[in-house]
Length: 477
Image (tube, rainbow, N blue to C red):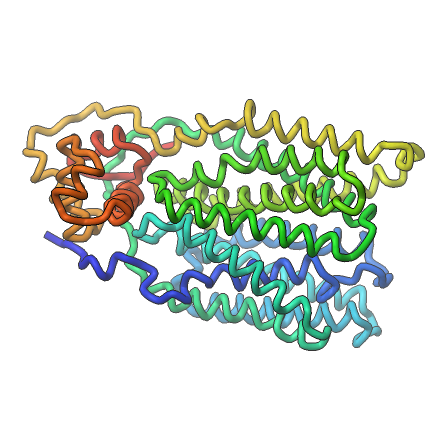
């Protein structure tokens, strides 16, 4: 029987691997939310203003990489794609920054377009390859890894943001290369392996999820464009990031302490309150405190981004679809929503009623549709369907221990996780497991979380169904 060693499963084995995605996130924040790479004032002769133009190309970048996945995925396991990703991200960042700050003036519209396309391909490849890693990890702490990475990204953002422009450009360009380097190292992580047998799960409402993502992202894109226009100082965005970073740090601390068995719920629950509350506060707050509403909106949308990463990678694991397809399409939908929201602001800001309270009215409309999207269109109950089985048509009479051993061999459970699985199969509680195995409650919860992720279930009933059949397997949409 194949049993993985305990030490090999408590991953990442190197602390810096926790921070790998954070380098990408810090790069994206510096590139899209500051003047490091984007040109907010210069007229580059583009069809759209630079920020909107780059946002369009980055959205298309996800679509292009998703289409390429039909022939080339998984990208993560091919060294040449890692090199291509690093080169595209670094060269695209440097070229866009040089043009935006006047270092290159000749044919700047065409060169800026080429540079933005290169950056967009590098960005899409990098994030999708991180998704391929998240999908395969055998540890149940993926959500905690994401939160730690995002917290680190905020710290890194503020460290780089205060530097002189030249140094800021150089360091920003190097961040995606560092992310690729860590991603290369993280490929050695043990992976969860589903069996070839089909395990029946409830149909997942993919269409409603995509529509909800688009609606929420439209509200986010519109609100950020409004903030950029009515903010009384450039510090509004910075203060908003501080508030959002503090919120994500609080979520990280909570998820580390509570060790939930189903981490996606920890990301889903703050999205609607943060977004709707932030949009309403943007209307009610005085301009000096606009950052409070803006920070809550950023917190909500970043929780959505992390939820997309977790859910789309789990969908890929259950359905055996390429990770690039599930991750790429959901992120493409989110970026399209942000693009539509930003474009809607450009259209609305030219209306005659814009100065007579129209921004506040539209922000309240955004708050309402975000609330409806997160409660009626796609709710917590819908999310749970991805992790809930519909029962089994075939049952086996083999002893429970034998079935647990088979599952352990298929899914790569450690020796300790097998012991925990056997106790869970007999209906034992976490406190009982702690006493029986002489381990701390946090350690027991960690083992249970790892077992759930490796087996592809989200609750105790799903675990019982897998044990009853004697094999884990893929799910079906």
